[in-house]
Length: 638
Image (tube, helix red, strand yellow):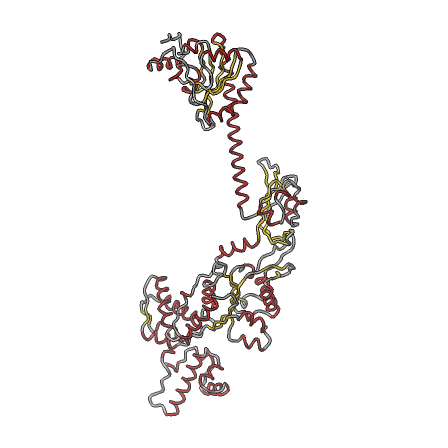
């Protein structure tokens, strides 16, 4: 066992004590280690340039540079040949174990164990084999703080100098800085690769234009939209390689923001409608770095708008309530229309539930996943109707008026629901017919044809045939729209369907107001007797208004509107009336009942009574009746 030099440094003293506690022999021979593993090889590759720089800096005989891994295994030794020969005679031939447990006290192990620079020379080494040598070692750490190994300067024991440790520390710090830079560069490359992968998977096109108008980066989606090869245009001048719309060119030249403008992009495949945005990029010092151009098909925004604004059909055939023969016939017609692809014309009086049928047909069709876009042709002012239906092109620069899509474009892949289609003026009827036949439209004030993919479900009243006969509605358009026709019956012809509807509506209204509501028999009889000219919509509004007017749980006849309550019983003649008076009152009551059943239509009322329209009119004059008499209360009916 060797003798400890005096006075030893505290780390050396602690190491000697540990060696003695292990009963380690001072005459030990250094043990060869297995070939370096992958981690040690990577460390050697990273440190090679630092080792060479350090050796060139020393460039004196009697010095060598040693690299050890985190397990204190010497994996490389470069330097003066004579010193290397001495080291070899001492057993220091990489790969060799220099850990304290196997080689005793030495600076390489101390640097790793204490995590600080260490220097040992001559007799400070526990093992006699290392006495001819001196080591000045500094630990190496990864960017994460984990120990990687140690870098040491090796020299003769008699030649050790305090500056030697300083050189080792400086070399270790330089290597640490290099490792940190390599790590940061690798992370930056990884992030760049991730960014490029993200750009390539994005659904919108992205182009980054440098300050010199050069294309710095273009993803494959942008190249596809504008009809160029990404590799072919990379690095070229943007305005030369790609012919952008004037507004995009102007925004980039002025370094101005451009947000979601619908513009035509001329490509080799023709004009492409796109939504373009330009975002100028500046650094913190407001130095211009370039512009980011985003391009996406206009249709993608249209689909997003439909999702956001909720242009989706929510009713299905399960929401259609009715079991009467007339309603079952209408449902049969609607199911046939849903299983086909042609246009559908819904016929019926106001309030019968035409939109309910339209949504149910849509949700049962192959286009159920597409939008359901509605347009009431009778509610839009005529000057605005063309723009609402076909859209507006806007000016080429988009500065004064940007273009906007119409309902036909927004309904792409789904259904366009046209209410009161008979209200369309003749010029728009012609444009709609051409759009259906050609499957293309031209926006108002535009010239470019746009492909469309839409199914039309239209509604019309009973006067459509009359409008066709009078030349106010095109017969060819009527034929195009009525590939399938669904006749929705009025509520007065649906029999006991009224009871089903009342029960369903009371259940929903009761849930809304927080209490259960029922109908008294006399009130229910009044509802059944009333002809409901406003059909299901009027029934729903009547019940809602009745419930809102009180807190009762049972609705009686007195709670109903007078026009409905007074129709619960026929006119009763006076007790002393003559036979002629009985006949007069019976005829008057028959006219009133027929008029209600015909929803006030005099022609149908006359047909129900089996008389001519002129005869009906004379009898109404004789009994003091008008059309309003069919609906409004009259005191004599008490």
